[in-house]
Length: 529
Image: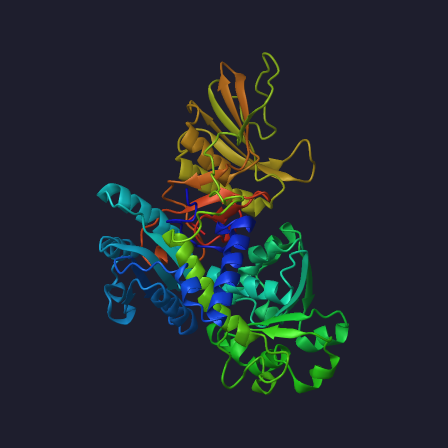
């Protein structure tokens, strides 16, 4: 079975190492046929089906990526369509689901989508699968992310990695690369946090002033992936360090996105990430520059005087774009891939388990102790203890109110903030509710997400009959009062799509958004923020 056929490609990590290397090998073969003008060789990769529908939907403006995909599709001799979003119903507040479902019904099998909305292709993949099942479509539509906001640009990462491999003589042992420019907005460098994993040993030098620095999430991802990461505030500082990489990757500063405070010092910021002529003599022999293009015509970070020098690797990089995208379309269509052998990337399955509920031992016949505040023991009900232990008194009081409101814990009883007996100096919150029944699993999950680490004591006849420790749940979804805080996320209410938020627990006990991959603390996922 062809494991590539019909798959979406929404982030760079949607393909395994083996799958990427297979793609790169096929791209090498095609590139050799194109250079030799070998028509028979090129025909091995063509879909060559005038009924095979590929649709370009560029909600955000693009020239290079769009034209690269257009020429790749035309190579395949397929039915290629383009949605003019400037005159489409998308600009009349039509939902993305309705738009793409309609186009799927017109026998279109692959959609190439660029958007400002982050995580859109992940949502469309899910929505398209459900639509195809409901309507008995012969083919589930596949979606290719051609860049989504500040999130990722996975097809650019494929062509970048292919180009780096060419530079490295196809050796995957190691890479040392400098990333310079607007690392905050640059989705091409964000994709490198996972994309560079094709190399066994990775050293990344991040060159950007603090205003344009790589977001913490992607830095943490690089570190988690075993990369060595170094930081420099300017190219001048990097040059003077004497520890330069031979591969440099520049990105265009997008200062227009950052407000008046940044624009007031734009000249200083641009200077810090623009290569100057006086730096040339300090570069290691064999250094090469890359850039996803376009460069700013007035303030290019790689000045045009470098175009005719051996530093110019960006032109070959750009030309590789169409070849990589031809191969990607060939794989997803099923034209090639039957001979693939290796690990197949299986989508991560986030099990909705109850492993966040940990039963604690109870001493036989242990009575409820009097509280120092003078509250009498309760005969039947529940006590929620250790709420936000170690946080400030203000934080705990605010969270107690939220817990009561969210779980509708109204009625008799009380709540207070007190010092921990086991950890003097640390505060904790307590809620007690006489006569309150034991929580169901959904409420238990909600409480665990509101106050991870708390304990729930179930009381009958003045004795604790059950004691539970609640840890962070593995997944949070189907709650009306949670939301991704990223306004550009497709699931955020500002996008108007009505997509329910969904979060998964990370290894660091935080929550990651299913769609845009923004990391949240347990305090940040609630709509009252």
